[in-house]
Image (cartoon, rainbow, N blue to C red; front, side, top):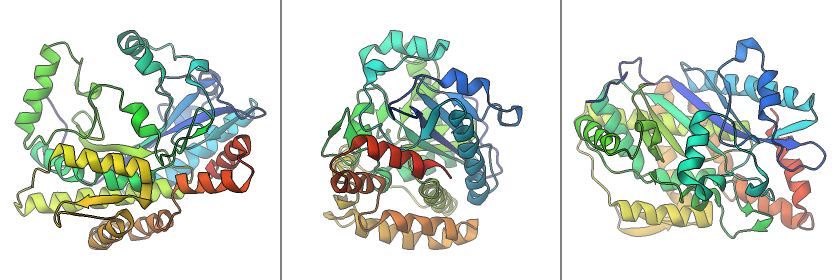
Length: 371
């Protein structure tokens, strides 16, 4: 079986954010990641990284003992890269997509993994001009990690609805709250993962793909939630990148509280229901289209309910878990995403109230992204 590091301590947390690099005058994306990386101070080495395209940078916390510490690290990271960018005539901004940028204008980072990805996927990879947030939660024990990932799986559409922050693509209002979702859908091995059940089954399936030459290792499985054996975490990857740092922190608190709940159910030997992939995926499409205005299928009741109602119910259910983890205040930040106040809803409202000014919208996003 695959090697792993699911050996604790449990419920440490790490957060990764994918951010845009902008030309400060034109507000379009700027292919300037190498200039920014060259200026990163030594104390942040390894926490500011390139991504597939030269107009994208990633900031990543170290493993943190709680959500508050992770949020403080993110604040320092966002502030630091914003200062570095501004000294070079650039801005840093955060959202799920850039409202009017074109993928044809983006250059690929000169790193072997990214060049190989372009060689393999071509046009599919070239179009991946999107930005997401990933939350890692440490879990103790490989079978428990699989249980937690399987448990989070059915909540993925609701997490997407809460995080929706990409209503524009190539200068057009798409009619979707998360246009990032269908763009990434073109990649292989993405979306709603299989229900694996046990570490043995997961290992066997990953090894089969490796033997067949489909993937080099498990990191080429880009599921919306996945075990990360090398880090000893369950990584939730469904989120559109948030403009507001506070919204990232709130969604991270929701993720760790949900992982804590699933971990407790594992300890209580509660069996997990394997919900149909096609039903979860149907919910995901609904969430991408409507965000928090969507109606999602409640698997227990067998009917559609408003995403808003589902979100409030989940927040109530997780209150005790958040309290035990010491992140009740951070979980409360998710309330700011309810009642039509997701990032996508805010973008559309600004655009409508400012004569459909997309350049002004990007300027507003950049201002709101700076902590």
